Length: 224
Image (cartoon, rainbow, N blue to C red):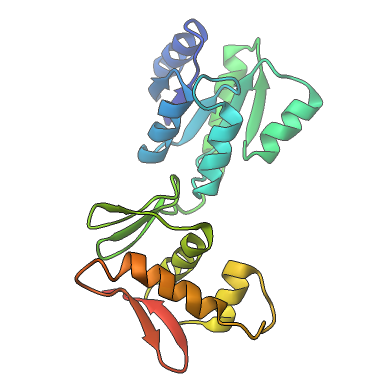
């Protein structure tokens, strides 16, 4: 298995990494949450072992961010926080297992092996693209032709909705439900207004227009 260990303790981290390598695993050891989050995002791992209390970004926030970006790599929390509520918080944050320090290495190894035997969910991308336009689902940053684009929250949600259904028409009703959680016609031009604002930032400064109006139907992002 390829395993990422995110542990800042200078004794525990190397101890875990060396033990897992002796069992034949490929192990990357990261000592802080910020670098661990980046590595978990760009790497392809079979399991992640993460401490809850980390410098930079704590383990809970790290796992929540991964799950928010639809990264489904199995995660084992390894921590001194062993109360019932602590365990519940860890599992609700997206953890798959929870082991309290001090621990026996044999149990840690067995739990990691059990995670590896679970059916893997299909990998989902951490970014959405249309030609030279990219939305990073992890950082929530948008760029086009390498240039950053500053979007307001609703504009960002609208762009994400269009990108997730790239090449398919999104009706006004579909956008109202997905972006504004409105399940009736509010008799306003809120969709049209936000599409116009989005175009002004995503399309107008560039050579090619990506957001299309499909007359009588709705909007779509060009898939070509």
